[in-house]
Length: 124
Image (cartoon, rainbow, N blue to C red; front, side, top):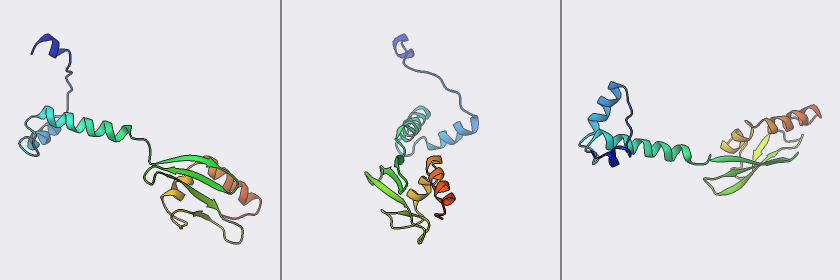
């Protein structure tokens, strides 16, 4: 390998058992070397980790929270229901329990509003 090409590469050590598993893929799915398999795996991992999160906390009021849902490419409203119909409600899914509601309930700000409403006598 020329010095010019040598500077473009880096060596990474992996456990032997993982290398052996990698070797089993050589000759399948178009892979001809361990390096090709590792490069493909790293590219996929980097792509996965560099994607923005599916849900993003957007806005909070006393009546509910807005969540950006990137899978739907829209903002979803999760409402805090009234004392006669307690709970949290996703206006998009039309459910009390969905990924949007579960995400909203993980946010400390949302938990704070719910706590305050309970203290004021508005049960969730």
